[in-house]
Length: 381
Image 1 (cartoon, rainbow, N blue to C red):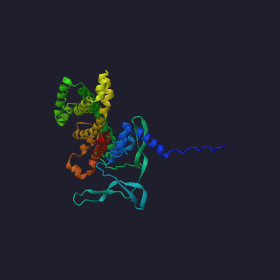
Image 2: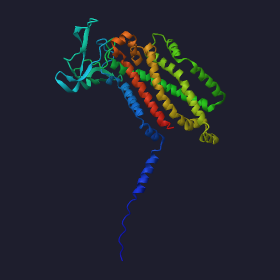
Image 3: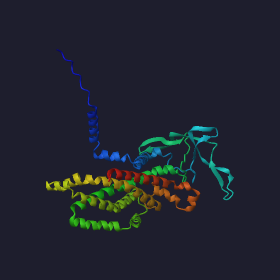
Image 4: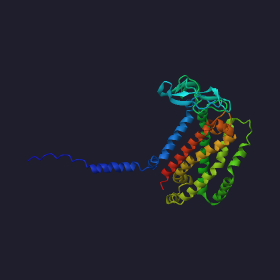
């Protein structure tokens, strides 16, 4: 008697789903995956990440992003060009720029020629426009810009300064110096603050006692007058890059103390945890305990401190640059550009001269939003 062959059993869908869920949950339980999952749910954090990325790309590709050479002189205090989708012939899909020109009529109060857009000469805007030749990163010759006009004439999207230099182009180039000062300073602050904070908190004893008194002395100094006093020690004939290097050292030398105090408190809390004491009991060296057990648990706090410390340095550089203590010509920074807005008469007559404030606001908002998002993602409590 023959029996019918047994049919293969249908797969248990419930078990398959459970297996997939279990596998996904297991692979997503890593620390980085959890941080990224929480971070991408933060709308301000993602906006900050996008803006920070755009700022860094702008600084890296400044020659390409800037529509003009930042040192070319045209008309002084020229207002921004008007961008429109309308010409005399009607609506156009390609935006056009209208340069500002002086009219034949006079102002009845000041008797100065009235200025306005030149509607008779619309200039189509194009991407990857051919313009002023430059050297990308100092050694790659090119003549293309991200945006420009088809005929290659000057384009002033934010107007010009008192010397007729394009404000947008100078702001794009200035992002390099300002962000470079902020990033190098925060790197030195992070290195010194983390190293000294972990050392002080882990060793403890008299070393920690006297070292914290030294930190308190540094924190007790009024930083702004001390910044101004130290920067005035540099001779006026010093090269611009040496001047910037001294400013970075001053910012880092006064800024590491607060981070050191925070890292020390984290280290003292970590040193009492059971797995650290177990590592000490089995004879692990101090270097291994610090690098394998304490430092990884302190890194999350340091990352957040870095993202929240960069905006403070950007604001500090802008203030010192406005006073003439951070960057000197021919270099460009956002603070140095604000020197042109030093009088109320200039601001009242040429309000577009305050455009560099927008660069500072965007940078500060971007890094603050990124830091807030990282803080919430790293520490869910």
